[in-house]
Amino acid sequence: MKTILVGYDASDAAERALDRAAELAEALAAQVVVVSVSTVPVPTPAHLVEPTGPMLVEAGGTTLTSESQPDLEELAQRRLEQARSRLATRSLDVDYLAEVGSPAERLLAVADERDVELIVVGSRDHGIIERLVAQPVEEAVARRAGRDVLIVH
Figure 1: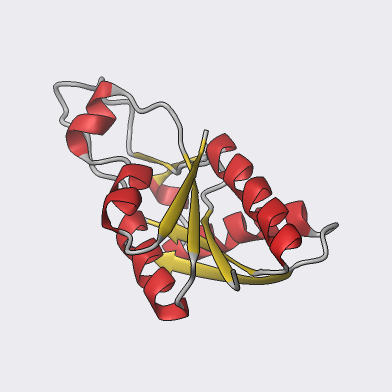
Figure 2 (figure 1 turned 90 degrees about the vertical axis):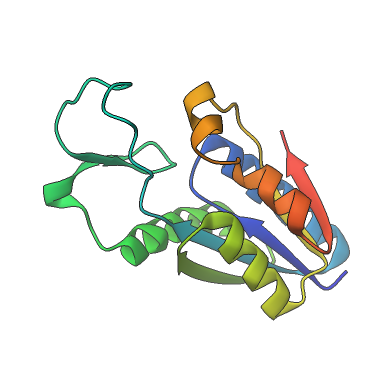
């Protein structure tokens, strides 16, 4: 195995996936490609949520008001800095990519571009509304990837 791609959004699930990808890469002398994808959140229907003002909640739990909303690529870059810090003590060949768009789409596109052998993503609990609005990233990646996928719980 030459290349392992890991999806990273700074969540607890992503931290576990990053650690597992790093362990595998060290054992196999593989390169790691860490991809952080920022996306505009899907609006929740107003009748389901009490409005409290405009805000953006990114996957890592950071809450930003629309007035302070930074560039989406900047958000991905911030997450990649967290990943870089987490991997700093390991002897790994790592590339870091910031992407904007649909997380599953971008992870699959980068996997194809880089011809990776394994995609590693974290799994977390998804609420009913989240499942109604969109398919979880780990499920979408696992269903559509033409390569091995490791879902870390």
